[in-house]
Length: 141
Image (cartoon, rainbow, N blue to C red; front, side, top):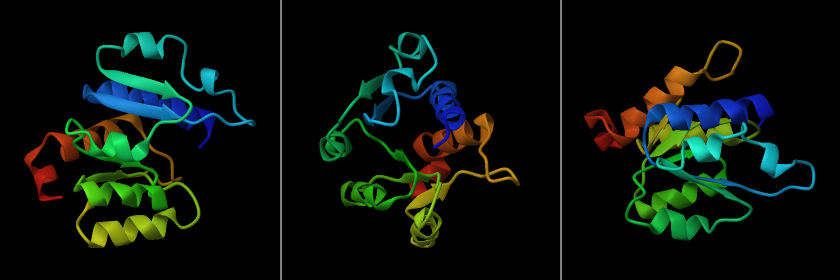
């Protein structure tokens, strides 16, 4: 995911006003500490947790406070189905669009609307997260 989209995603989480956990994996190619805009962790410390490095996806998904998952629709996204969690889908590359289509057909996810060029805007992502996590429509997933 391009750095600009990572910054946007972080802003969307903040804009949703919902609690969150974000795990940013370390990579030799990417300086994980500089993925988020300066001050993001401090600005959202009462709303969410940003973990740099590794996080146990299974332990996070199993926690009773988790109400849904915002994922890129890769195979790792499917683990959340075992915990009965609704998915907010943001497919990015390769087979992720096909995975998202299958999850949508099964009624276990909601795909974030895209712009014509394939990018995402702040408001639709924040609205999608709120729709799945807060609104009655999300209870159908």
